[in-house]
Image (cartoon, rainbow, N blue to C red; front, side, top):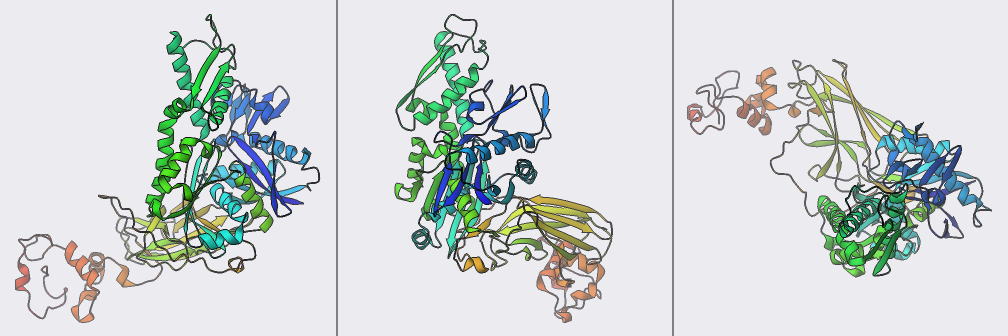
Length: 603
């Protein structure tokens, strides 16, 4: 029984295993297996043969062929030549084919039955799509032992090639990893800490994947050829011609990584004109000019994740680039401009590094740990840890749960607000004043007329094997409920034979250089608490129920006194607290009576 590393990609898929302390990649014609399915009558054709049968250009369903079926996950169903099919079944066909190709190849003949897989996923893959992917693997007879973000798997594989040396060299230093493949651009900022590697921040987009480059290039070339020949842009094309042109554009993109010019030829492309063939000589400079807007957009995402995390490019000690797009000369140049050539590492195995990393994780039996606390913002800017950093993530079929009993400190607007957040810094030991990232807000209705702390609340928090955190809130008086899912969490992995694997706490001693702030934004004031403490109630509200609380002889907290005075108009002149015409403070005696005993003036 074997647990393999499985990189199920948008455009290509690959299985890797570890043998003799080195990764073995099960390739098809020295390349990963295309994630393409063709349904021809009763026959299901998958992989490279299916890719050659694409009916026309574009992602998703094209005639009887599905290109990049991963993009369909989460939909109820799709129609393929009039036949309704479920995306889970389509993905399962790809998984079966990749497993079959792996086991039937010369290197896989002695491979034991594949009992499970460490499967890589994009960082922005939402919960319902992760569940659908797990169902597809289960339908194909492969259990998912653990999901791992693609860039994190790539970094794990990169370090395992020379573990001790790389851990010493980059200990506590900032590392940026990105996977720029056919479907998505995935980024993660990491930091090795001792014998662990921990994610600091993630980002991902499907707007600049390699498939989008291919389509933009194809559309531009069609425009150029039509303009040069004086052909109207709506000219008819032969059946399947656009798919053949898209394939040639993809090949040209790859060729131009190694040469200055590529010839793009498609016989019998046009229909109804004298010259039917499509023939175009594409230079590297012209190609880069066509795709420059996409390159700019992708590089802006790389700069943006650093800015959002509070770091500058100069603080990045290493940039590890993976995915087919990282081989483009224009991408290399831009990375060198941003980080310097000595800090950019584009692996020779850029197309296989993610699968290799997943295989190493499977072989090392490395378990994901939560990198940062997941917290609940409480009244008065304090935080309640819901799930602590260092918590081992659930294995297949497991769910971790916890319930928290809370109070509503300010029910006046009729809503209890549960703000779930996470510190910008990894580790458990994070101070209340350190910057946080907002993850989600859960709200439930409460009785607006009740006193503070009378409305009891409950919050259930769970994390499942799909790495999805669910927050389920309830108000026990009005019986209202609300729930939200959070999928954008950060994780850490312990390398083998490490002290961290034994349960050591994740502790990142570094803080970002600054917290980006938006001007003019509104802040949501938390109104929940885990303790029945009067000091957590807004002063103006507490005064309505307990004016004797503000007797100066009882030394009420200054912040509550200021709140009470600010929101209550002057009882003498009735002006607002910040009105400069209010001069009633001169009427106050030096020894002030309690607010309940004398009309109040601002002071």
